Amino acid sequence: MSLKIGVPSKGRLMDKTFDWFGARGITMTRSGDEREYSGRVDGIDDVQLVLLSAGEIPRELAAGRIHLGVTGTDLIREKLADWPQQVAEVAPLGFGFADLIIAVPTCWIDVDTLDDLDAVAAQFRARHGQRLRIATKYHRLVRDFLREAGVAEYRLVDSQGATEGTVRNLTAEAIADITSSGETLRANHLKILSDGLILRSQAELFAARAADWSNGHRATLAALTSRLGIDAPDLP
Ligand SMILES: Nc1ncnc2c1ncn2[C@@H]1O[C@H](COP(=O)(O)OP(=O)(O)OP(=O)(O)O)[C@@H](O)[C@H]1O
Ligand SMILES: O=P(O)(O)OC[C@H]1O[C@H](OP(=O)(O)OP(=O)(O)O)[C@H](O)[C@@H]1O
Image (cartoon, rainbow, N blue to C red; front, side, top):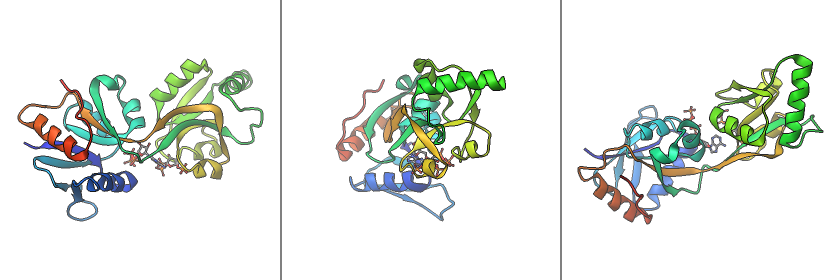
């Protein structure tokens, strides 16, 4: 049995992950046609490539079904409540940078901070009898952040994509989502609160604490990390 490494199956994260390993002598290739989620690893023995959605990689790591995985820091922290118990951080990869932020309509000129948002949320509830809605797919991270900030009069509405459009579509008053260039926010007339940065994310290589590290897998990990020029993580 080979050591399994989970890598995003499409898009920017897949391409940049392949480039990152390729630059260090480990060649990853997707086999078959564009739609076939299988691949191979050359340049090191006993390592198997598993192509997965970036959003599924945290769960696969937590279950120990893959030994290593590449995904965003944001997805690990959102999907695994006690993530340091489940995964070890092996190396930040220096791509996939994105900020998870809270944004409100640009036309809310008096709203610049979380305190302002809290005040608006209280007014909103008094006026409409309902809590101000914040659209997001990052439920855990947003709740934890707003609790720390003392903002309570809101409710989260789930949005799994095109989150910035929810304000225009009148299904939310504010959003919490990732941004990189800021273009999507601008195009949808939204502005980031000055203290609304929840998390800075980038792609990272993680190791699963629950994976089977016997049967030579630890030696394979040591060979791989040495090849990559990084330290092997501390694992049970
Ligand atoms: N501009 C960006 N847009 C979207 N994701 C980005 C961006 N920059 C970096 N990322 C990171 O990429 C990861 C999300 O990748 P992706 O959208 O492929 O995940 P996914 O949720 O598995 O997608 P899907 O559900 O469409 O398969 C997150 O960690 C995110 O922080
Ligand atoms: O700051 P920007 O460079 O404009 O990038 C941010 C946008 O990119 C992501 O969406 P994605 O394209 O992955 O689609 P999604 O809305 O389905 O998540 C993210 O959810 C933002 O909408």
